[in-house]
Image (tube, rainbow, N blue to C red; front, side, top):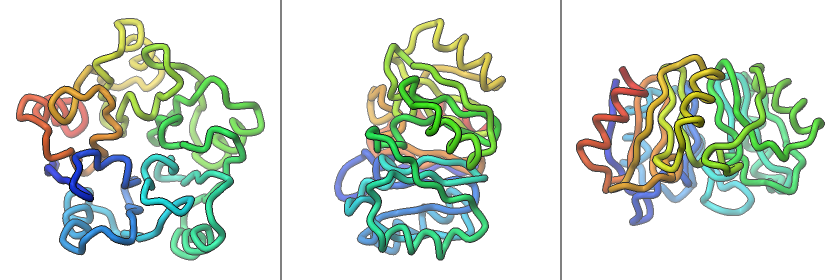
Length: 223
């Protein structure tokens, strides 16, 4: 499994700019070609799509999903939605109509289960279930609804924020049925998703991530 340090737009918070599952990565249009090639190679994706989301480069903040489907907020621009529909013909693409539009911050999903904000209503939960094809569980991490920011999950393990408590580890171990442990990124940041992303083939981490942090990431997500 591959892992690489990376910075984008001069910052190590690379996770806010990228969404990826095992087949596709979605990135902002202005990312340099050499960084696109790194993303493609390390994550082993077949396709890289360049687009803004909601008129911004914050692709990783606004998009969530897994290998079955990709979720976008209702305020996505029409040209962005048209492009994704054209490029993602083999995946479910669903609009989530909820005031909480930072879906990447509110949904933690792999191909078996999704932990989501407890404040999503029933109609939103149905959209998530129908398009991700997983069990949907409402819950928090470290008493926060920002479950997508405070953990990274693939189909191998779950890396949990250093802000988490012991009961959070037990909870996630129970619902994901995978190895769960605590880690940080970018020299101690507990906001894992902001500083990294991972699929089952590899991981990209912010360029301030230390050797011990990388070792923990490899042990949990890439072993």
